[in-house]
Image (cartoon, rainbow, N blue to C red; front, side, top):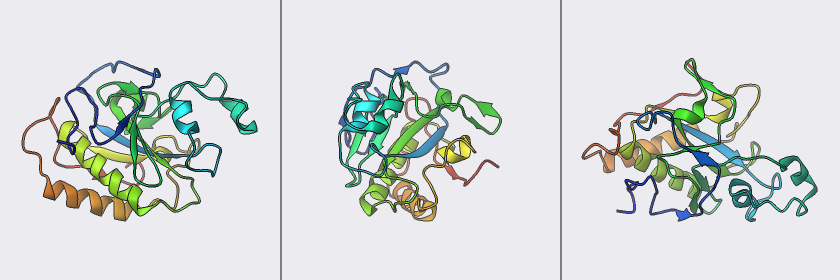
Amino acid sequence: MKDSIGADGWWPAASRYDSPHFDCRPDPADITLLVIHNISLPGGRFGGPHVSDLFTGRVDYNADPSFADLRGLKVSSHFFVRRDGRVIQYVSANDRAWHAGTSSFRGREKCNDYSLGIELEGTDDTPFEAAQYAALAALTAALARRYPLTDVQGHEDIAPGRKTDPGPLFDWNFYVKSCRKLCEEFPIAKAGLVGASAVLRFVKGVL
C-alpha cells in the first residue's frame, strides 16, 4: 500500500534518491521523535536540484557563491517535501539520517539517534503550500502507523538559538488537524516494525 512505510523503511509514495550520509541507529527500536525542518538552496530559491545534491554529496560548489560554505558538509534528511507536494526520500526510516545536528529533547541529546527528519522546501519567511501540508500529513500518518513515534517538534525547538526552522509561518494548527484527520481515517490496524503508536504529541517547544 502506498500509504504504508515498508519493512525496509522506505515509503512507496516517495521518489527514492539514496544518500550516503547515514548510519545505523544505536537502538533500532528507538524511533520516537519526528522533526520538521525547512530548507532552500540557494536561500529563498525553490525548484532546483541543489537540496538533493546536498543530501547526496553531489553539490556543485561553483553553482552559487553561497555554496562555498557547504564544502565538506555531510548532512541528510529522511524526507524532502517539494513546494508542489512531491516527496523525495534519501535515507531509510530504519536508519539514522544526519539532520538534527547538536540537539536535545526532553533531556535527551543527539536527536538523530531516535528521530526522523522531514525537510520542507521553504524559508522562515515564506508561507508553505497547501500541497506540502497535505503531503506532510500523509507522510506523518504513515510514519506513525509504522514506528513508535510519540512527539513532533520543529528543528528550532530541539536546537533553540541555533536553528529557527520551520519558522513562524509554518501553520502548526493546520498540520495537526490534517494529521489527526488522517489518523482517524486510517487507524493503526496492527503493530509496525517496532510497535507503532496511535497517539502523537504535537507540542510547540519542549515542555
